Length: 278
Image (cartoon, rainbow, N blue to C red; front, side, top):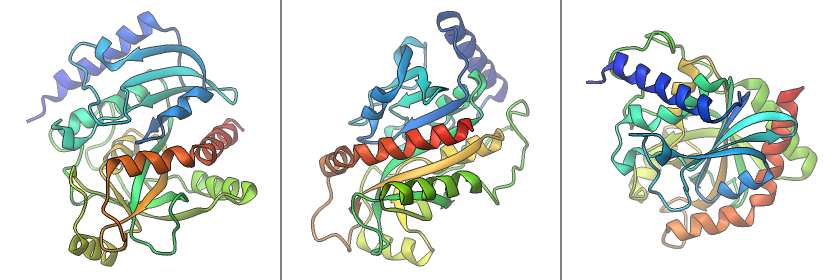
């Protein structure tokens, strides 16, 4: 069982260690998904910290996740960017998966933009388009809030009726429309992975109301909501799901498509940060 006191003290230790090295208080946190790490080049970098520099910190092992915190300025806003996330399928406890996000909150961020690369089961959404997350289903993975509650971070039973900020959802849709970028709004479902879903599973998830699926993000959104952060989720649709796609799925394909639409992704996120500043 999670030792809540030890976990929180560990977070405070990481926060203090970073503050000693980097004199920077971010306003917005950004989590970059598979194949989207190049977005970090848009940031006027103040400092870079490898996860491995923090003793005992979970390290990214997934392809396309370099495992760094990037501190800097984007559109005049101070941001901290996770270039590489931690996944449950890597063998980490769910409390470790959300630890980097909780740390960014303790460093000062009060808004988070959570991005990912997803498979799509809604045939009205095109490959290479985007979905701003309206709601999510996380019933198939352990909650990041299991165990003793850390009262310093949030309440024991947080409300989940509006995990994703409605104002930020509208802004992403407006930015897409203005720039001719195909952006939908829909429901995201998180699954454990690392295997891709079967055709029968996809039919079930579709019947539950999901539009897109992935192996991350929803638990991060839950943890952020628990702490009172404003949350925006942006999914890059890199493939159609099993049973819909005419080809077999691969991680290489995910990264390839994400790279192809990186320009549109950069525009969406950069203009969203600019809007947040207003």
